[in-house]
Length: 132
Image (tube, rainbow, N blue to C red; front, side, top):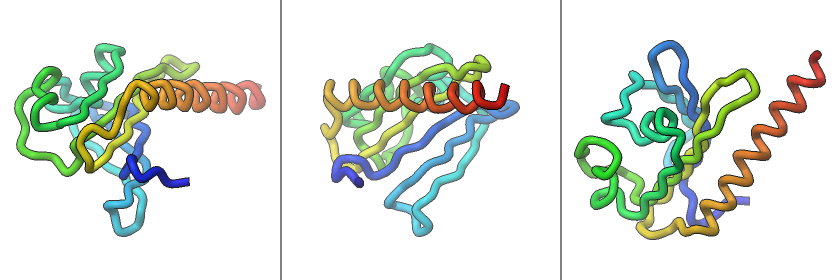
């Protein structure tokens, strides 16, 4: 079910020297997102979370993003969540969630996305184990 608080979510991973995001956004015509850009911890919150292995919770992009990365122009989403974790093959990934509204994520959302990240990890682990 769609959450009124979440306008988009993605899984991000490294591929060569790029950060690749794949997911869903109700802001896209097709609904699906697929984007990649050079990996840069100074300009990307996803890259920052992945490199530092730290969760990021932002509820006002304009005021809070500079605590992690360089100043950027206004962004479509105001509330953002980044949950980094590592897959079985040591592949770092980040679960990302976005909301247009300010102050839409709280500690409960952080816990929910941690659980979702654990579920993703477990699901992938089970698939890999089945193949062996």
